[in-house]
Image (cartoon, rainbow, N blue to C red; front, side, top):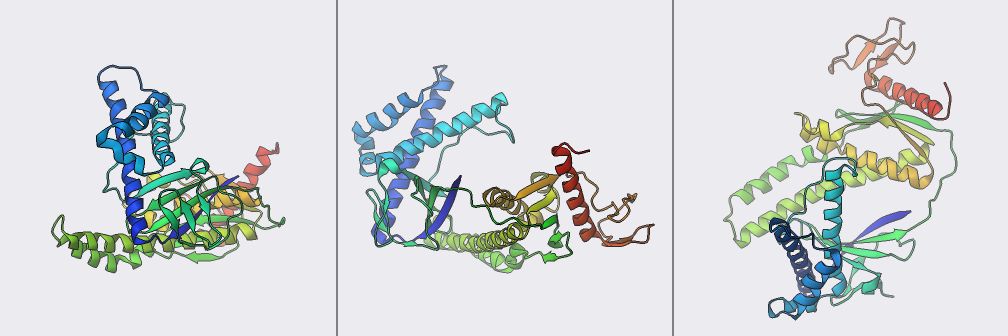
Length: 378
């Protein structure tokens, strides 16, 4: 299976300039290709093929005086920029025809030097390498220092160099690894996600909601105010924008670290994990949008799914309309109504339930039933 490993880069001053030049050349090639295809569409001409586009946007453009500076960067980076454009068009056409599942894909858009994220990709053809001193050797850029937090399990097939809105540089490697199943265990758990508590497990454990964005709102508000008072185009505005971006980056990093640790712990302890198939996109359109995004449910469920696949665990999703909160886990009776302000309730059978723990128990039971039906049970 393919995995992605990301490490922090610390380029020197000259490498900052070389990376900026490479970002700009890749962006120019992407925009030139997109412009050429749009003009062909407007003028009623045939769709420009991938090979013809590469010849006109890269090979012929390098010979023109106004594009001669494209020769200063690796040709592989330019080819990968066009490959990204071709992939974007294929996804767009597949979405229009209905072959691609999920939300509709928009047509490719022009890239800007003011985009919050800049990226370039090197494949094996570019002959990038990790030196004996632990640096990342990139063609026409040099040996870039890397903060290695863990070793790479195998030889990477490609590396993407990313610059984020906070001005940080990262190297994202794609490596091929075999699945590493963990020892079998008898543990099973149902998970009920929420906003008051991030998650409640069927064994009674309650995991508090970190609310990273809410906790950082005071600093973010101060940084945003300082940004709004600066003059557009000034150096002070650029500095203030970076401060805002760094504050948001700290929030995102903390949320990612929390979800990684929690998802790993749950996968290691349990053979089967059951959770609701939440529509996070729909919930993000409600008045709870800010809290839903702050919780990071989509990130957490995505990590659970990928880690379950890698470590040989089973992840089951139950229907989002399953009445987990209103169903008595002791006798199976269904309550008529269950307002959100009711956190505990008593069933006619005498059982007293914590709303979230009861929901997690019901989710686990529903996951077991779905597994039996999938295996041919009644």
